[in-house]
Image 1 (tube, helix red, strand yellow):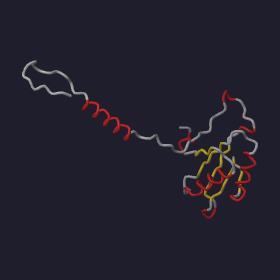
Image 2: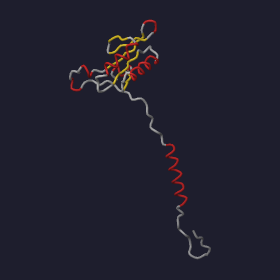
Image 3: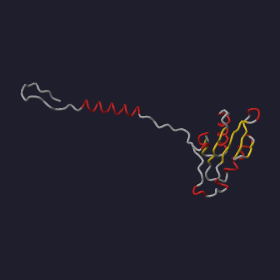
Image 4: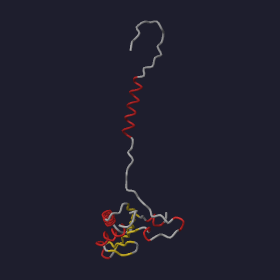
Length: 144
């Protein structure tokens, strides 16, 4: 850039664009740095009623594992209202999901139960080959 030293010619109306580009680049870097990354949490699935009120096939029924507070504080497990021992839970889930194309299961825990047995049931289900595990909360159970 050249500077004029003479007194003739009046005012110069040339805009110096270089500082504007610097400010633009700094703002671009700031906005790129503070852009929030979308969090990836657990996907929750809710059991859906059958479409057009068609009867469900035996293979299409939703598998719900209920965990209740049993005698002596030990959790009691149920698969669709059938009592199951904790030691038999993995085997029963493997046999149920071995013939299914969609391996989705839901867990419903007792409100007075700690999360430990629920987390243990999720771990057993994942070990048995279940792809998606959904949690049934009291609001979902009430239909809200």
